[in-house]
Image 1 (cartoon, helix red, strand yellow):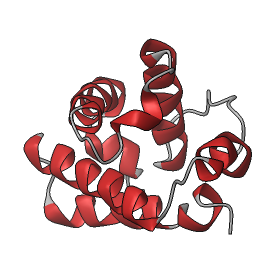
Image 2 (cartoon, one colour):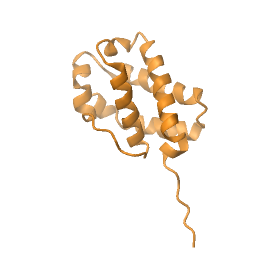
Image 3 (cartoon, rainbow, N blue to C red):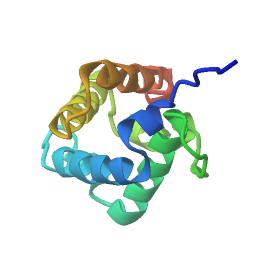
Image 4 (cartoon, one colour):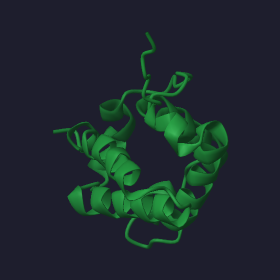
Length: 126
C-alpha cells in the first residue's frame, strides 16, 4: 500500500533556493516603497533577510532554523512607531507580487498569503 505524501508549501515553492530568491526580490520591493521603507532605516538588512528567510522556511513547512523573537516582541517597537494595517497590507502586497513574479502558481500564492495573514494580529500587537 502506498501513501501519497503531500509536499510542504516550502517544497512546492522550490525549497531553499526559492526562499532565498523570494526574500531578495521581496526586500527590494519593500525598501523601494516609501509607505514602509522608513521602518527599515536602521536595520541590518543582511541579518533581516536571513531572519525572514528562516521564518518563511519555518512557516511554510521547511526545516526549522528560526531563532528570532516571536512576532509580537519583534514588531512591538514598530507598532510604537505607527505600524498599522495599511503597512501590513503593503508588505503582504509585495509578498504576493514577489511570488507571482517568480512564477509561483496562484493556489500556492494563496496558501502563502493565508499564512502571512494569520500573523496580522501578532505583528500588529492586538
